[in-house]
Image 1: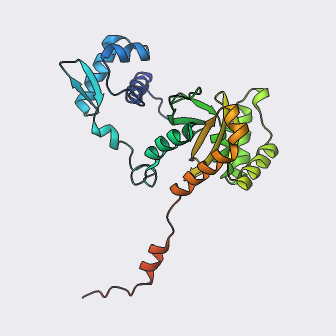
Image 2 (image 1 turned 60 degrees about the horizontal axis):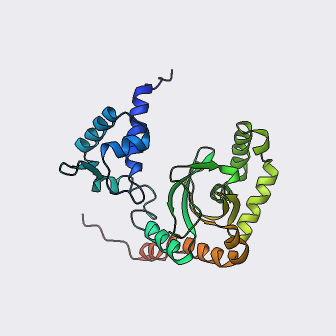
Image 3 (image 1 turned 90 degrees about the horizontal axis):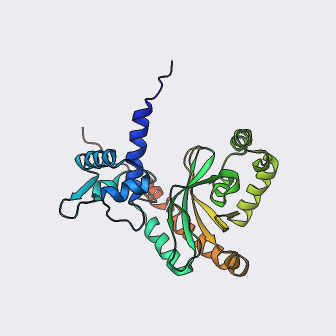
Length: 265
């Protein structure tokens, strides 16, 4: 029999993760009141939570300034997840470069159930568009989500669309046949596109693990950018995806062709 989860423990875990996510972007340090006001938490429980995170080594406290900031432990937290992109690769610096080079909002998304979550976004200062990190969009109505779905096995996608449509309002339902056709188009042209975030999102799949996973990279463009310079943005995005692709397996093949090591016995 499944054990029910303690709501208090769930609440505490959620708040701890939300505090760590608070420091994403330009926030480098904050006071108790900064975090309490932003999150809508009571000051007393926020102070207790921050003290706990300090004790665990995830935050450090400047006693003179009465501010908190993340430690290096946060930087390596989860670094083994998708190591090709995060631990060994240059994905996040590349996103900064792309935003500066193109003037577009660069977005990293990850499939979470029936939605895609914006896990990292870089917005140029001059951009009129913004996406909130941690926000989500319906899988079948997001450029990032469509890029992930295009890499799925069709039988699995059929089951997924059945679940998605069963839990969606009537106007948000998408027939499987229509989605399959759009996925075919995505694979043929090399990118997905959707009206999203006040503009147009173009996206490509950059990592596919098991069927429950999928990481996509996208560019959120204004209507003018999309209509007048789409080919340029698509070329840059596909070039970025190529840079993130796994290296050829030639080295592994060469190693396998070497003479076997003689074992001494």
